Structure formats: structure tokens, C-alpha cells
Image (cartoon, rainbow, N blue to C red; front, side):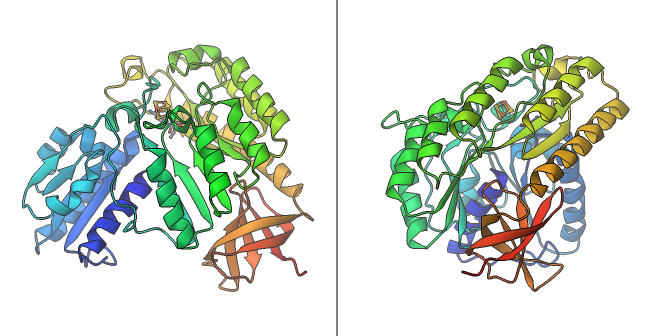
Amino acid sequence: MNVNDSEKMAGILISEGYKPADDENSADIVIVNTCSVREKAKEKLFSFLGKLNGIKEKRELKIIVTGCVSQLLKDKIRKRAPYVDIMLGTNSYFKIKDALKKTKFSDFQFYKNWIEIPFEPILRKNDFSAYVSIMEGCDSFCTYCVVPFSRGREKFRPSSSILKEIRFLEEQEFKEVQLLGQNVDSYRDPETGMDLASLLEKIAKSSSIQWIRFLTSHPAKFSIRIAEIMAKYPKILHSIHIPFQAGSNKILELMNRGYSIEKYLDLVNKIKEIVPDIALSTDVIVGFPGETDKDFQYTVDVLKEIEFENMFSFKYSPRPGTKAYLLEDNVPDEVKTERLIYIQNLQKEIQLKNNLKRVGKVMKVLTENINKKNPNETVGRIYTGRIVNVKGGKVGEFYDILIEEAGPHNLKGSIKED
Ligand code: 5AD
Ligand code: SF4
């Protein structure tokens, strides 16, 4: 979401005649778009702001802070970094153009409804794969998470605007779209009441975009119709990011996740029945308050049972303002680190095993970049998001790739000649 917000702000500024600078040393304006999901991001912000202030003491520089940290810690930023000129909250990044006309400006207003901003100027990371936001905010209030506070309540984008943006991307010959939202399964078209499954079907039916992805899904809200639609339209990629966060029911309840682990496993089994080649990925938090060795073992068991394609794992980080912040952060940091390393090693083995099964197979790959380490190779992804190093090839193309080698994090292969 943050990357997409940055793309939107960059687009607005470029259409106003501003030009991108190489880095902060050559820029007249620096916008720091921040994330506050975990504590580390906040500390990074203050150290970067200190560096910017060093530049500002020598020459003119406009410093702008946007995003979640700005939204949540406006007063702290004002106090610790009074040299910041402009601050915008998560719902008001689109005001960047007007904000830049002022010397001091801040806006942290929350909106109840979706605010549509022009999508044409968005500065995309490339010209073949695009993010398309469909909703913002979250009403789930997981007890550890700041997002409901930093981004506010759920706001859904009308499907008519989503489809218009996708049509525009189609005309620009984009090949892949990623529908974005904190909790895409809550999606309800404010105009027609259409849910995510129907929206996906509508896009698959009406658009020539070849790869459609969406994230993030919530296990308590996921509708099995989505899996049915996936099975029907292969261009909706068979890949779901559906975090279970923890394997212990006690911890899930303390997290207010709204499901038991049995329900989660049941959902996964149903999805697998409908879409046998489904690639599931997850987020996992270790060291939530009260997590015993036994609770942690349940998380390990789930990872072993499901064998996720991908896992993003985090040490619990207490966030002020959340309900869990009131609980004692009683798992020592060394234990959190130990647990994190343990599941990361386990996941590495699982990925290696899964990837080795792909050797000898031909898989469709969308190439995204030239390999920085080897200019004779391109780097792309299969439908699951797994990275593939491809011998030769052009960037932004689909290729049938014969997989020849596999590691835990990537595959290697060459273009299959007809
Ligand atoms: N501590 C650790 N991880 C967190 N996440 C969200 N909040 C926290 C927190 N306070 C993780 C969750 C979420 C992902 C985006 O970040 O796993 O799914
Ligand atoms: Fe945070 Fe939970 Fe909402 Fe995800 S569903 S953004 S973890 S509150």
C-alpha cells in the first residue's frame, strides 16, 4: 500500500512539472512516506530525518513526511523534528500538490468514503505490472495492529472506477494487475454491493489483462466463491496471501483474529480441493504476549502441515495505542529471535523441497528486471510469486521457461524453444 501511495504522489508531482531527483543529496524536496506496522520503521524515520536536517542546515530543502507514522505520531514528529515542513496523513497524500505551495502545512483528516484521484498520472514501477487499489483501511482490529488507527475504517472503491483503471492499463498494454487492500475480502462495491469474488469474475471476463492477483486476504472473511472463480478463470492467478499469524487458539483469540486454527485449516483444505495448484502464502508473528513454547509449537505444526509457498515472519512488536500494547510483552527478545530463526529455517527447507519438484517442468514466467548480477539474465516470477532467473529474454514478457535448477528462494531456467 505504501509503495502504491508513493507511486500516486510521484505521479501527481510529475504531472505538475516536478522532476524526480536521484537521491536526497540532489533533491529540493524530499517526501518520506512512512510505515508504522513495526517499531523499527519509526526509528528509521527519525534517523533519516536527522540526516535530512543536516542537508537542510547547509541549503534550502523542503522536508515532507507522509504515511502511517505521520498520521500516528504527528506530535512526536513536531517535537523531535520541528524542521519538517509538511506532514500529511494516510488519507490525505493526494493533497501533496496544494501542500507544496505552502511553507508549513499539515492534514490528517480521515474520510469515511473512498476518495478517487486520477489514476492516469500514477508513476508505475514499470509498464507491464500495476497495482490497482480497491479498498483502504481496516475494521478488523487485530489487537497487535496499528493499521485500523493509521489508515482508518474500511473504504471501498466503486467497481466502476476500478474497471476504468483496468481498462486504461489494458490500453497501455499492461500484462498484470495486483488488486490491493488491507483486507480485500471485505470488499463491497459502494454502488452495487458486489463482493470480491464477483469483482474478480467481472475483471477476468471483461479484461484482456493476462495475470490478475489480489492481496491481502483475511481467513475469517475469505469467501470460498473466490476459489471457485479462480478455478474457472485461470488468469486469476492461483495464489492467495492469507496470513494465519499464529497456530495456537489461545494466541489467535488474544490477537482477535476471529477464527480458530481448525477453521483456518478447514478453509485451506477446501481451497485446495477446488484449486489443487493453489500457492498459499502467510504472515506469522512470533513472541506475541503469553506465547509459550507449546503455543509456538502449534505455529510450527501449521507451517509443516500446509507447506506454504512463502512466509513473511515477524517478531511481535508492541505498538502504542493497540490493545495488545496493554499486555506485558513477556517473551524475551532472545526467545523471539530463536523462534523466528527456527521457522525461517523450516520454511527454507519447505521451499527448497517444493522448488525442487519444479525442476524439469515448463512454467509461465513474467520477466520483470535484468539480473543485476548477470546482465545476460532476466529475473521474473511464476504465478506463485517465486522468482526465476531466466537465461536471456526481454523484460516485461511472458515466456514458457524450462526450470533447470532450484534453490529455496529462486528457480533458474531457460526459454523453451517451440
Ligand atoms: N508486530 C509484529 N508484526 C506485526 N504485523 C502487524 N503488526 C505487527 C506487530 N505489532 C505483521 C502481521 C501482518 C503483517 C503485515 O505485519 O503479520 O500480517
Ligand atoms: Fe492489521 Fe488485522 Fe487489519 Fe490485517 S486484518 S491490517 S493485521 S488489523
